[in-house]
Length: 463
Image (cartoon, helix red, strand yellow):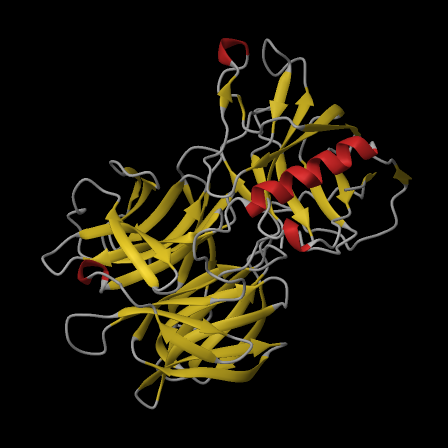
């Protein structure tokens, strides 16, 4: 990997930072070849260590399906390139009412399924995958949540975010009691959920979308409202630019896929969809295309949309769509809370581009950070392993080192408060699935006794 730095103009929007297009770096440096090849060799070895188990494939679409009729639904695995699909075999009966399903970006031998128990309550299962399908399903909660219905799930590091009709919960992937994040007020009901690890978007009414800052106190603010009076939000997703995607349905005007600016809450585009609810949504950051599952002529389909128009459909499928997830790497997976600077603000972190082989301009972007010396720490992690965490103690309350520091890259943050380090990712099939944890640390003498502030952990998964 080669690294160089570029410091674009400040872009500190109220709810996110709009990333600039790639440009030639103003100043370039080359990492030592020894460090470069040591890191690449480590990633390759770690990626190869996970080859023994059956894995979900990149580009697989995972649809959690509730039953058209009868007690049981299922999980459908579809391939958008070929439009083929199959039902996941071996799924135990207790997981046959999957309200929401998500793959684990850190371990593609696992699915997490929120299921509505036939006897009442909500349970989350960790489903292990083998060469012939599902091999086991372990409940994560000691007992089902006494709630009416699960709605959506999202992966957040070592936790699952679970949205039900009544509340938002954190559920540890290793299993154990859930943590209540928010209970919804009367006359509202959980409907859809999306997160980039720093912010959470959720709909708890038919038309309004609310946002929650995951780095601060659990307070909710209104993000935007859909136009019209009868629009009913069905699902949410976030694209590679940070914009919010909304699938909604109106009994008179039909179903739409809307793109909402993440900084202003204004609608950027609206695409008519020839599918009726229930709708489920997923986004492909690499191909910049969208997938919407819904119903047409009494059957379920997945529509593939590109540049504002439908290009093909997958189906018909045997179940009503409950959720849709694409097995694809994201620009960056953010976890943890970071460590606030002297202005009581956690430095923000995102990525430019995707960590795909052959990308010579993959950028790791720090913003809203204190001006001065900073270091980006990079550390390899075996696929499926838990993230590293080491508290810094009373000298820096709430601060934790969340990366095994295999490779430090030093830089300087200018007065604008942001900097981007660009890396080239070589073309090497052995790198596929390699996991690198990263974290920025900045010098801020007034922040705490150790004089340090830090970003969240950003995990890179190489494709």
